[in-house]
Image 1 (cartoon, rainbow, N blue to C red):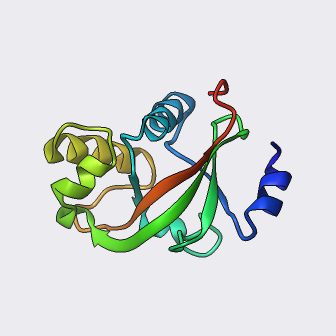
Image 2: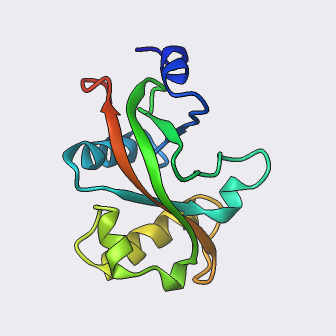
Image 3: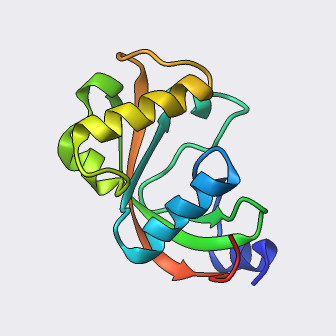
Length: 140
């Protein structure tokens, strides 16, 4: 199914990519597909004017593979703004990438350092979601 067809099926849907490169993107999509990843976060600065679309509770969005093909449709269940230093282990584990809060902190600090800078008090857009539809399982 094309992005245009998906946007007709899910009016108001935004598109986005997990991660910051093809390998991380594929890993994160696999975690979502497996049911292990039910949350994600990004730096609030990246959602400012001209940046990524802010997640909206109830909206269904299209997660893209790194090559731009549609991978998944998710529905946002919860959105909170939380400082990096205040992220809980419960949320970190819901991201599905690490076994504990310390691992989440290490990996996310490295991610933010690669993508615009890191500050322990930086604000994050923390989103919980559920999968609505799996698409293009073969793509990466």
